[in-house]
Image (tube, rainbow, N blue to C red; front, side, top):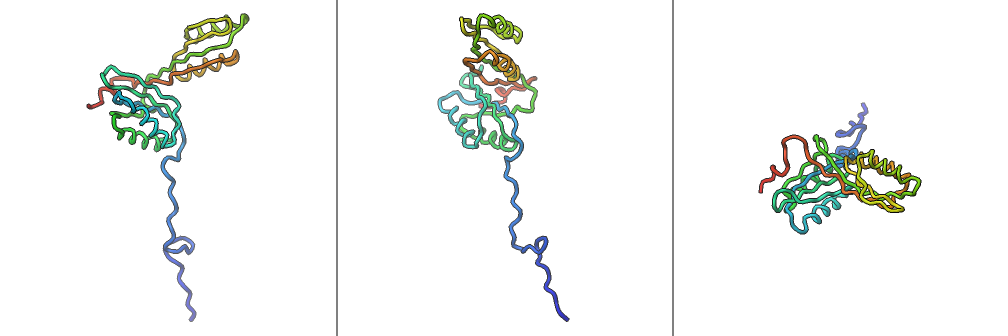
Length: 199
């Protein structure tokens, strides 16, 4: 009686037993979304460069970076706005926390926050449309900080969306110059990243 060889074990459809398992997706390959990180750091030279270098090494493009002193002597606060998927940003946050002189890092993306940004916008104007531009600044709760024969400089503050909306409205007149601070963020309620810092 003839014999038949048994099918190879260890894999579907006769795949050899030593076949490599299917490769898994690498972390950090998900949907990109906006994240806001708040970091408390020691106020000394070189800290900003180390933070920016870490983000560059992880291939993040920083949308905005706002840095200022705090009420505590020798302590500064960074608000970093960037786009990335949740896993990659979480890994970057952990690596930031390991840097010397970085005392605390929080991803406040999903937390209830107060967000504020300031922009100076130099808008091109003529005699015929100057009044319209000034009215637009007033309606958007902005402030006129300079007026000349050819331009109006408006100071606009609010959420990123509110600043974006004003910029879109005056773009038809012509924007000669624009500068934005980037968002500063503070969590609502009684929590405080500064009070959480142990030094």
